[in-house]
Length: 143
Image (spheres, rainbow, N blue to C red):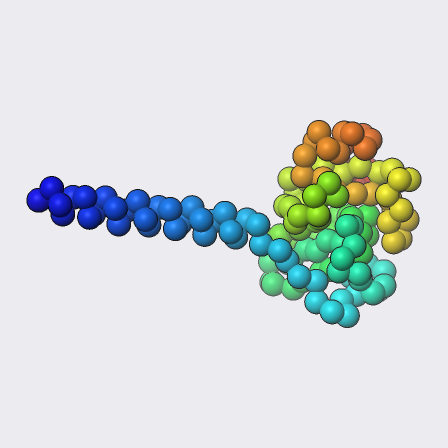
């Protein structure tokens, strides 16, 4: 009986480990911008290696790609059917949830359409570059 409990515990522990690993791996997914993608706002070709590239996914599953956060903010500000938003963290280059990111406008960034807005995962990193605004206030950077 003791051996059976040990086997059950080991199997349970392995299952938990695998589940945690899988969730962590999904969180670190590197999204890919398809070759030839165009910005949904301005129609310009997108450089998938740009630190400013971002995208949104509608509730219907349509992907909207953007060459920078400013173009994304303009395009989706009045849309109600956005399911997912992903932006690149300017500090690390990793994809992060756009609604959890902080946004900074600075001439230092020199974005493709000159909105000069960058996204950051950390308020500390964003604050080091300027006035860090959360998602709900980021739309004010368009003025």
